[in-house]
Image (cartoon, rainbow, N blue to C red; front, side):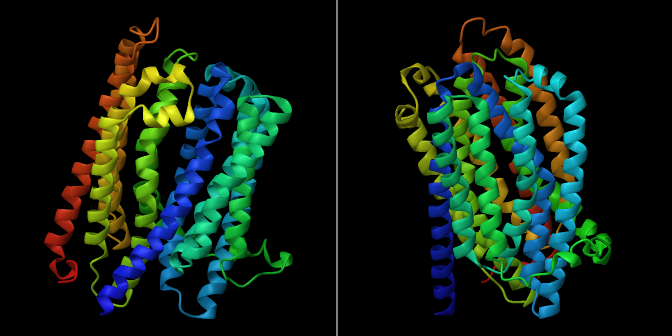
Length: 436
């Protein structure tokens, strides 16, 4: 009976987070039609979104660290320590942001020109949004670890809803542009951060206590956990994001918007797997701490596989459907890309589940192998790009199919590494096998 209740709780919690993620994803995606009319800037807008993902990579480890800590916390002292650590990290992030903005002030024009951005302001707003993108995983981690999935869902949902409302209002008032889109993105991040902080349930500290927190934190313990968790979690974001940066860098800026449209549809698969992984992770941490077996990994893998099959079949049968919903007819030329992109993401979706299972069990060996996969994947993309660019004097969907095939090969390598380390873990730790 308890096992059945546990499965129902998992389905209910992951269902709510999936609903919140779905609404957040749809509203975030709904921003794109407001920007797509400015085709020359749409590629830049999408590239800045992926740059935000890359900026947030260091913080991915923080979410896992704080999920671990919050799941293990039992006393008021544990919760106060969590609050002090959050404030200390926030202080460091804001200090680094000041340095980054000073660098942009002096050197940003050259970078903006190399990335074909319409103005330096687009890069500046992206970096400002990056501050909240860095802090958001940390506060999400506390909600996740304490299994406050209700409020976690609302924070995630607000990320997209506020983004859409703000971007729509700005575009209506001032016109379609990458800058207005990124301002909306930044406001969405800020709202989600405030909701997550306000509902975490951690004790509050007076402002006079904030600065001393920097010296009261056990930085050595944080770094010891942070490095492998950041490498492991960041590898997933990197594999999902770096292709858009490479395409924006090498390909014609007038064409990258078409590729971006197909990419956003394909990457949606990973976003829908995310809620199940977010529910799975703290449950595995708690089961290890309490030395109680759980079958949550098997359940998550099964549901992920079903989701991948459904998405893949729809990608084969009706690849143009999401394009019809979100874009005008000029984008229908990339329908073949949608099919390839979805199937290219399937290995990554399964790999994400396996990697997070290992990280939740504090088996960090895989985290040091995945950066090698990321490096090889990047080299393959960069090496393939010049030859593919030569085929795109006029838009040629087959050249962009070459990019998606490279993505699929890289994600297969990611899944293979995840499978190998999962096999090694259970071979050496047979008693940690899932519940019988």
